Image 1 (spheres, one colour):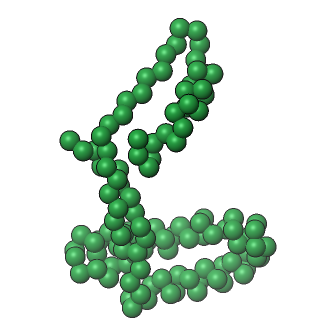
Image 2 (cartoon, helix red, strand yellow):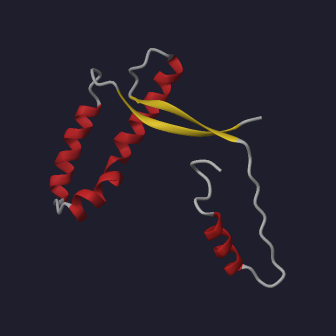
Image 3 (cartoon, helix red, strand yellow):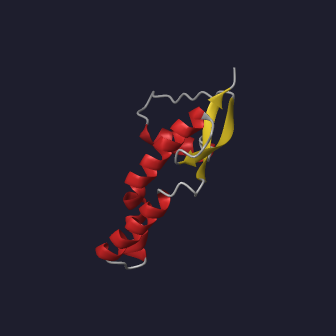
Length: 114
């Protein structure tokens, strides 16, 4: 299949048949898909109007979601206190807002090929 599909068909069918009642059945369909890779901007720095708009959303998502992406690692694994994490994230958010930094994150889209 593709990067977003079933990793192991034998495992999939094993699990499916464990869940079936007698007489039950499993159906799967595969489509011709292509994975498209893009560089999603973080911030409104691109000149292209569509990418500029996407960058605004990327910036908002990262700015508001960075705590959730960080808390497990910094608190539970590295042993940071909540105050240490909040100070670090405040500095991160400040850097994130700098217009001189042109960052992006790799993004994949699973597109149906007709």
